[in-house]
Image (cartoon, rainbow, N blue to C red; front, side, top):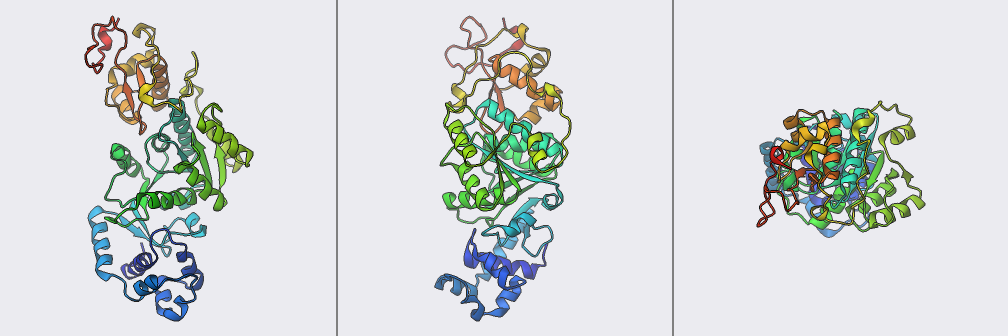
Length: 414
C-alpha cells in the first residue's frame, strides 16, 4: 500500500471529483502522482475539461477531518486502501475510462495481476436452477484452470459464480456498490466471508459510511466488474438490467463479450440472441473461453451433471418459489441424492455447507442437487442457496396441511 501521505492525497482527489469520475484519468495524464498534481496548483487544474467551481473549491480546501475519519474507519474494518501508485492496484483498471482513484479492499487483490486470465461473470437475480448450475460450472472450471473470477455478490447468478470459483480452489473478487462496512445483500454474509477466507477479495470504490445513491453506485460498480477482466460472461441476463449495464461497460472498455445462449421464449433468451447478432461469442463451458485466449483447460469429470432423466426446464421467467417438480418416491432416488436429502433444510444452505454436512465432494453434490430438484425434493433459492421442499403429497402424514411448512422426515416417507 502507498504511504499514508500519498493515500491522503488520493482520497482528497476522490473527495473533489466524486466516485466514478473520469477526471482521475486526466490527473495521471498530466501528473506522475497525486502529490505532483497538487503541487502544480490551479494553473494546471484549470486546464481540466469542465472543472466545476465546487470541484475547484474542494481541491483548494479538502475536508481533512473527513479524510482522517475514512482512514480511521478503514483501520477498524481491517480494510486497506489501494491507489494507482500501488503495485497491487489492478493493471486492467489503469486503462479504463473513469479509473478509480482509490479502492477499499478486504482480502488480497495481488492475484488479479498474477492470473493468466480474469473473467467477469454476471447475470440475473431471478434465475433458473439451470442458470445457477451453468454459472457454477463455468466459474468452477475457470478458477480451477487458474483464471480469476469477478462478480458482484448479488443473489442468483453472481453468488453462484463466486461459489463455483471457490469450489474450483481458485480466487474470486466481489465488487460492492457501497462501503465495506455494509454486507450487501445481507443474505450473502456467509459468501462474503468465504470469498475472503479463500484468498480472494471484497472491494469497493466507496469509502466506509458514505451516503449511498444506490442507482448511481450500482452503475459505477458495474464498470469495475467488467474493467477488472479481459472478458465478460453473461448468464441469463436481461435487457435494461444491471447485467446489461455491465455488458455496455464491457463494450466501451474493449472487453470480450461471451454469452450463454438461452431459451428464446424467455426475455433472457431473446436478449441473448440480440447480443449474439451484435458479435458476442456464444459459449456453454469454460473450455471454450480458455481456448479463445489460447490457455490450457483442465479435464473435468462428466458426472458433475445428471446423465439420466430429463434436463431441468428453463424457468427464467418464473419465481423460484413457484416452481414445483412432481415429487418422486424416496426409494427411486439415487445413492448420492439419498445421502444429501437429510441435510436439506427449509431455510436453505450454500453448496459448501451442504457438502460439509453430507460429506459429498462438490461435483457429487451438484449432481445430487440437480437430481433432487428434478425429483421434487429440493429447489434453488436466491443467493445460490438450496432448500428442501416439503412433501406435496396430500396422503403423506408428515405434512401439516394447515401450514405447508412441515419438515420432511425422509426416513418415514412413503
